[in-house]
Image 1 (tube, rainbow, N blue to C red):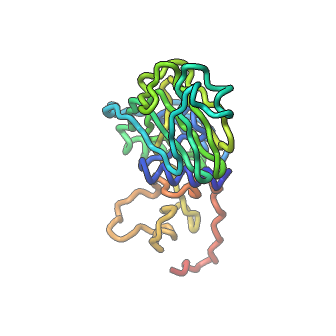
Image 2 (cartoon, rainbow, N blue to C red):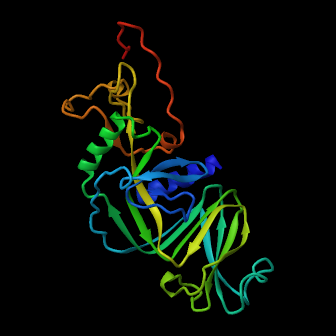
Image 3 (cartoon, rainbow, N blue to C red):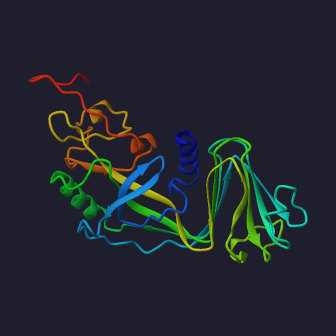
Length: 278
């Protein structure tokens, strides 16, 4: 499942420059604070409970998300469906058949998606770092700083090559053209085989997000450490050139799934009176 999630994560990040909600359909809101693990997002608290004042920017203009990666899409009806789909797809309904070519392949479709971001991020950042210094912010916590919400939503992720599914679009849908705005009914997913996750709803739901976490170097005390940064000085917690005014700690958006899923590794202990080799 970890490799499936990694593939889905990287595909979503490459396509949308945002992270997918995992598991699909999981509730996620601006200012949520929690832990992301292979089995899903687990909310621990939020900025309101931590008494951090948050201002949300006005939502962006609505747009439709329509993306498939490693999947082919076709339309079937109760009359044209094969032996597998026919018992499940109601007569007169149109179905969207999904066939996947590899593990981690996915289909994401969402109507009227609007993106909302934390507007006072600098102030929030300062307050979070203060909480961290006082031991009130855990290292594994991730802060949701941006969330994309839309609906209806269809998200299907393959666990293996050859996975398939059929989404019931209802009786008012038109075969050959997918308009989620015309969908009536429950948007059920049936005839499933080899899926890692599936989610379909007419309600508005979070589909993509961005987040930040605190990175801290422990050698000689709290120092800057940017996970994924190739700069040697940065790895040792030293400010990179031209960044002398940076705060002691800072928030950064992780670019690699491993930076969130992996537990923080213990730092090696430096010998007394010695400097780390660069």
